[in-house]
Image 1 (cartoon, rainbow, N blue to C red):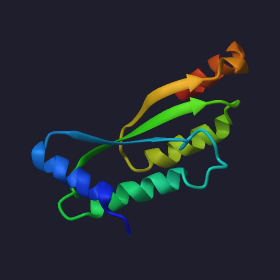
Image 2 (cartoon, rainbow, N blue to C red):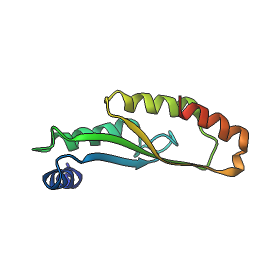
Image 3 (cartoon, helix red, strand yellow):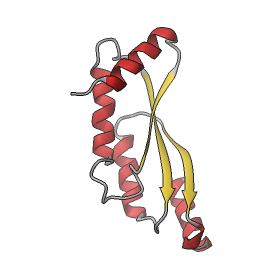
Image 4 (cartoon, rainbow, N blue to C red):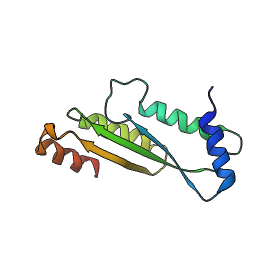
Length: 116
């Protein structure tokens, strides 16, 4: 099991115990066809980081980069965010861009869903 992330989080915690740690990933909510970036894999990585010796009390939050090149599957977006919310960690949309070619109606509809 790779431990680089857990080791780096642990080292940062040693420097500043008050820091909030984000795992900021892309493609977690954008596309259900990417088997490497699913919400369950995101959660598994969070648990791996927490299980590293000394990391059990990290103040963690979830960051989601959101780059939509295709029309968003809003049901998948909602389901993904609900799955991630099961961790109890706050979730932040750290980046949001929607291809302008999708049109303003799609963009407005998506933004309404994203912030509810």
